[in-house]
Amino acid sequence: SYRLSFSETLSTMTDKFGGFVSTSPLSSLPHDPPLTLASNCIRDFFGPIVQTIFDSLQKCGGFATLPALLANVRRECKRIWNEERERLVVRGKFKLQRARGPAINGFVTEASSIRAALLVLLQHDVVTVEKQEGSRHVYTVHQHRARLFTRYPRIVEYVKKVMDETAA
Image 1 (cartoon, one colour):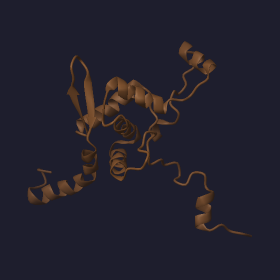
Image 2: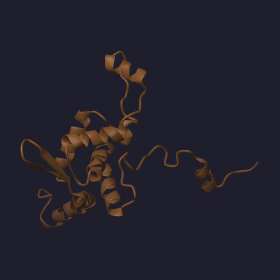
Image 3: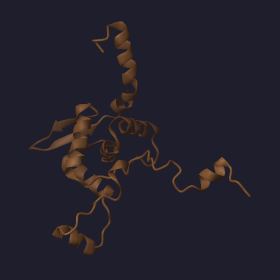
Image 4: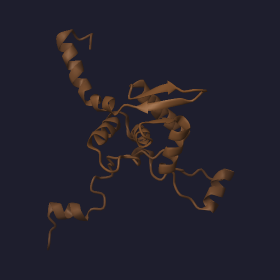
C-alpha cells in the first residue's frame, strides 16, 4: 500500500492549521510585517474579536469614529443573506447569526461586542480617543504599542530583580 509523506499529507489537507486562523477578517493585505506582528500580538493577548477591531482601525487609516468603525466591521464581517432570510430575522421568528463566521475567528457584527473590544484597546493604551468639534470622538490606533506586549514579561522580571517582588 502507498503511504503519503508528511508534506504530501499537509498539501492534501483542507485545514492545514487545525482550525486555528492567525488572521482576522480585516487583516492587512498586502502583507505588512510590522502591522501583522502588531495584529498577532493583539490576538495573542486579547483574542480574535479585539484583533478584528484593531485591524478595522488600521484599515480605516489608523483613526475612525465609532459609527465609521461599526460600519467597517459590519461590512466586512456580515453574512450575505437573501431577502426571505432577512424578512424572517427582522420579524423575529428566528435568531440567526448575522456574522459570516464564528466569533472565535473574529467575526463580529454586534455593536456591544465591538464597543467592548474597543474598550479593551483603550484600557491598554493601544487606542487613544480625541474629542473633535461637536460630540464626535475619533479613535486612533498606535500599532507600536501593540508590539510591546511581548516585552512585558521581560520588564516585569527586570523590576522584580532590581526592586523586589511587591514592586512587580
